[in-house]
Length: 260
Ligand SMILES: [Zn+2]
Image (cartoon, rainbow, N blue to C red; front, side):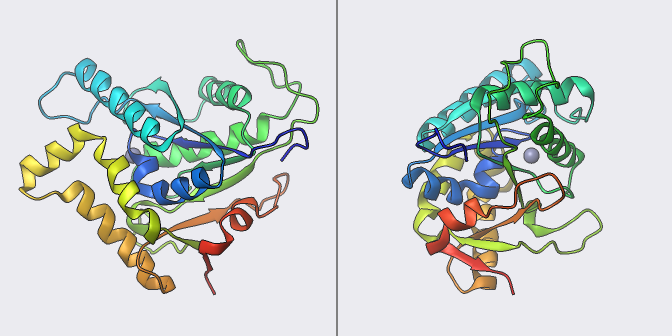
């Protein structure tokens, strides 16, 4: 974290509206309570998330739901404007994420797992990794880029777990550390509940409140693995060129369970 900053800043880079809530919503409420500045950016507005609306209608609805969810958390929300199932790593999309990062100026970035159940998530993870590496390079310029600040450091990069902790070939992906979110579960449910179009779609289809219940079941499974009621999992990017300070582990230390 740069010396001039008083408050740590976290940017969450996810593929779709509701991914941040499902994967790391409880951890976000912990960080908010600790005074962190939070931002969420999604690659798409969820334009394929409906069986009844047009793409334009559902994009408008889901953008508003994502904004309402971010407001409930107390976070900034932005959308890059790509289309569902068409999130891919290319130079233009790396530039777009760098522009968001140079504006929001995060100390920490959390994105999707490098391996996950759908390609939009994996490609978003790669985009966030590429942009995190490029953001502090003065010679990496984009059309709308703010100038790189003197002393701008590469942000710490963390990965959420793949959905349900399962990689595409079925193998279990274990977190480096768990965050006990038992105190924050109700807020996490409320935040996820802001995505009414998705909740209603599943409820009408299955007859139960599967949207919230499935997330809760998954958090309980993780909690059971680390000896608390509900938990989320995270991993830190530790490769060459990235900072390795355990900023999140230190900030969340009362709630952390390290995987043995
Ligand atoms: Zn998603």
